[in-house]
Image 1 (cartoon, rainbow, N blue to C red):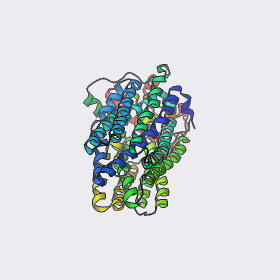
Image 2 (cartoon, rainbow, N blue to C red; image 1 turned 90 degrees about the vertical axis):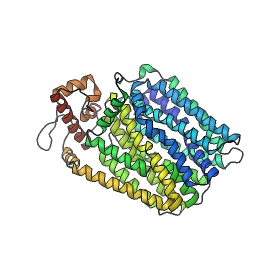
Image 3 (cartoon, rainbow, N blue to C red; image 1 turned 120 degrees about the vertical axis):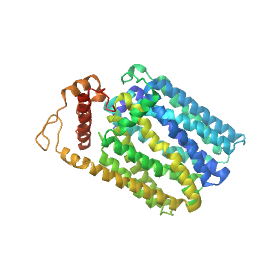
Image 4 (tube, rainbow, N blue to C red; image 1 turned 90 degrees about the horizontal axis):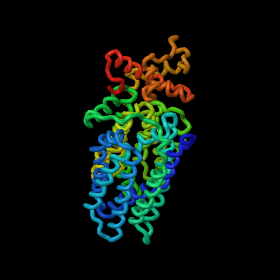
Length: 481
């Protein structure tokens, strides 16, 4: 369950994040409560969320290109240092009583711009630390850590805000201090233990961004993840706006209650991460199941007026949401060639988090005029439409039928349902020997000694079909070409 921690650099990274991430969650609820305290307006909270995530919407794809080009450890040292300065700036402004909305707007923009470059780099850095064989486990452990921090951070942050001797400024100071662990872990890493990922790509930035998009939509199995993240990210994952509004206006809670609601989602996500850590290779079916359950539970939360019922539903929501989003993350990490990973993960981050400027601001506006519960009902309905369409797409492209047929397939050249055997084209095999990122997915899984899942067999056929087409046309060997 913890095999990725055998990599010394990832172990340092993981324990550094263990200290840093709770501080980030403290700042998240501290900033939300500060905005409501100053303005007492849901739409202003939505505006601050828009400013936090707008740079991600605008620059995440550029951040992905940068992540594919730069030394990732050194670049993360820079972005983590910027986040430290931003946290202390917020704390000092609150401590001296000179904080105004315009200063929150500016610092939110700075934080969002930093995240647009930091997050794709951290996502792409995982494979460099653990290698392809442990990436699924590393993603699950990172998700578990992130959501464990979502339990601890908000609970502590709510107590700090409610304490008259510390107050909101304390959440910002503690976050600034917590970055020391993340920076120290990056400094302590040994570059000799990094896994080779090939030479960084060169060329025009616009062309490289387009190549990332082209790869994402070159295969139905990849396209369905991208489409789902766009819908769920825009209309479902707006918790920086919806949770404080739910706590204050629907349930009549204070900062402690708000912290408990945020922690409830983290608790459920932690359970989801523990479940995923035991799965060798997640599947598209798990992706659809997790996000479908997430949508239904979100609708149930909109009907709840009881704190304890809402708490339990948020635990379930966190579990289902983690299953869907982390499964999508893992599938993209495994399928994507090394030279495209930063760009593809930046698209994933853009659609899941960068769409929040639209969804968060829309949530704030709707909540001002229709209250938060009807707003959540409407957003749940939109997410459900996206899920139903995705299931239709999944079946209409005959992926479901292929999966059923592939369930009779076994690794090692054993029989398919039609009597054929699974072999890779000779050129593909030679290319995979030189560059593991070009190996068909079943070869990757077989090389790891893991059982072949029906989902991977389907993706392998699509990958081989594209590669064979490229060879006939004598085009470059990149899948995205």
